[in-house]
Image (cartoon, rainbow, N blue to C red; front, side, top):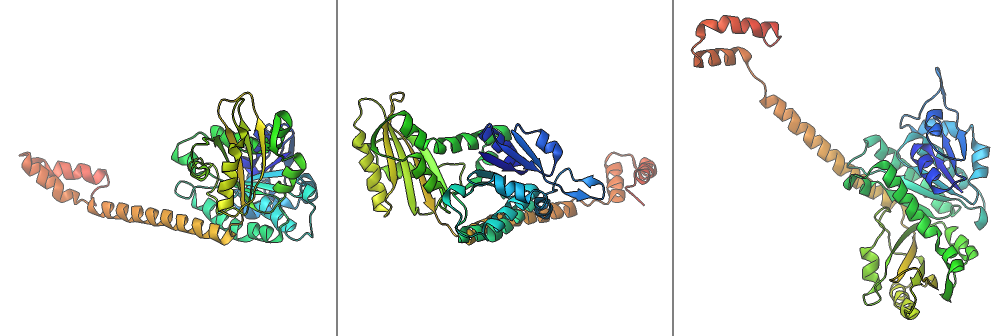
Length: 368
């Protein structure tokens, strides 16, 4: 089951599963989702229930208290989807992560996975970047150190903005990508198993590990080095991964093809000292080998913070430079209308009309 927190999370969760849950402080935003269950978190002002968190995580944190017990029950063993930039998603998800960090030895079956959508600094509001930096260095860091979460998926809005993709389409791309990864064990049940075996229990144990998860999928050419193909087919929706600690893959081969090409994949992982779990199946519905790969890595949150700081600083520097350029432009555009009016009148041979022109300029507020 997917639990979506905030506007972005609610939309993604609704696409992810039919029994999804949407959580928001805005009743209006809740009504826009197709979630099976809608949870309103109470955030009051003098005028009553707020209609949004106004990009302020503090509002989300306060609202969390009204649904704390219910939400902690709902997330067990499930996937939480949220964004790090907004107020509701950031605030409520931060509270969840901080509380999970205080628990002792959460069983694998009850661990919660988190899919977080990160803003793209050059194109999104500065508040989103600041909120994200606080989220990465605080709640996310604490949760990782506690090892009390499942996998963490870090999606980025970079592709959306660089390729001008509509939000609805981009959300669908994220969801379809996650579903490709989630289908790994079920394909082992559907198709003839040739080598290895990743069953549902193996897959659950893998997803219960408190590491960042980067996955991708592509048509595999056994005549080419696998590592090169893996790099070329990196998932553009996810933040770039670090060196993996663990990995797993599903290789689907068509009829009449030698399935031992999977050894080429094992050779690649052996070269980086990783022994992956894997399944090799016969899929009669494809024409080319197809591989789905997941890699777990333990990139320190401070590294992520430094990346966002660098991007944010570059973006801020550009904004400042543009502001200065604009200021200089305005200075250059300053005009002495009285002198210009006399000059133009002389050029036009209408010196006798100078007084009339100056009178018009005064009425327009251009002269005092």
